[in-house]
Image (tube, rainbow, N blue to C red; front, side, top):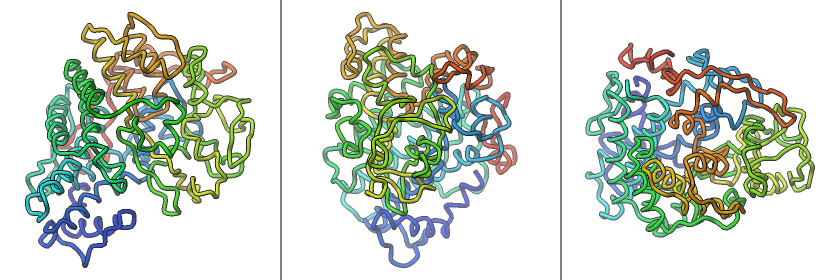
Length: 502
């Protein structure tokens, strides 16, 4: 936390706010300081915009925490990378090295900016509507960051630190909350307030698409309550999205992952991306692309689907070919139809969900010209409406209710026959097939369902049934949470404690 606190001293905020103006078209006059800032509506907009700048870091929503999602049975690390491989194998050797060390601090940076907006909102000379909008955004962004930290690092023995937003940043280390429930309660309080303040998606001007809106707050509330195992509240907030959020599934599953539908009726919250030279947003499409892009583009070749995922799909499930490319499939890349083949693949499969932008000629403006930062014009979904439906289905089943309607909404679009008397096994199947390779986080699903130990005790396979990843030893007493980055423990002088067993 020491690094985090230093960032938000007066000189730090000047650098941060000035650095964010390129994409956000806000031009501050002079160098802002704590004493002179937070006066005008322009100050508020500039300060709030700074919450989004860190999200464009390649390791924020490009890889970063996706190394943790990669631990699931749906994928393997496509190229040797010690940090990623050690995390997937639940080996403590990943600690204190690489990108996973930075994930904690990156999210607290966003929380720090959000806290400044919240703390200074009353000083701003602006209309109530403007102040409410940006206050709602700050509460949502803080909540999203706390949630990602809490479910990855917090458990019943220790939560994550909560920053006192009523005060200037404290240079002293802040200890962890007593348990993760403290964090979740804090988050839901903020999200309910955010939901009251935020406009609906329909009320946002086009220039603000990608910012939080009311249904996004309701949806995140539903997911947080699901993790809390408060199924009544999870079902309630999911239903708010379904009945009041003006959301609906797109008719064609493949359309969800096309840039022209970035903010469609299925959108809940995504990471806006641009393929311009100064590319910002999620690099996940390029990370999943064939390593070196068949000699035409700098794909990174990570996160390759397994045969276990491929075999999960039922015959006739339209989601299968949208989700996975296998050897021999026809597809379009760089304006030319080709047959999928690879000299780099471990599994014989590639995730196909994020490939739409690559079907155009690479110089057409849909893909970043810089393969070292392979963004496309797709706003990569962090949460979408289908997941909200499945959250409600799970909450109903967990509380003894019937979820046939919700599960069959998902199955109908997939081209599958309806099921009746749906069970939790049906829910798990649909969630896996619907959300594979997404930020919904299959690994975290397996952990909270108590399935991880059994699932990870089996090896993973490629298309030709060859073993591509050995069975792993998952100990729920240790591995239900990830290791706190060593740098945070060191910088706190031991005030922040490591999770037991790591």
